[in-house]
Image (cartoon, rainbow, N blue to C red):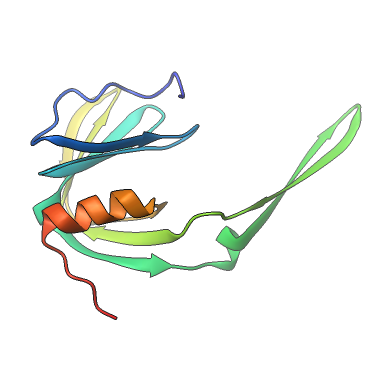
Length: 130
């Protein structure tokens, strides 16, 4: 886990799922989810979610990183392993090193594991459209 993650001060509802990777964390309770990035947490009430739709982009399919150093060039290719979604919300509370701020509508594009997506759908009341 990244040491730069800020602790979640409070979480409304019962904790249902938490998942953290190197640069991103997602915690889901019965009333909200928290997206964690280094130095910032985004608290979203499940009732404030407008939509969650699949998101595809060529930039997410394959990315090449070139690191040039005195030892030579290092080339790495990164491919997307999990599905990405665009999450549109009415409002979000941002907790960063400067304090806590409430902002209006926001969109996130992020990878969401199937278990997390299922928990968000179950507790938010969102329905799938095929």
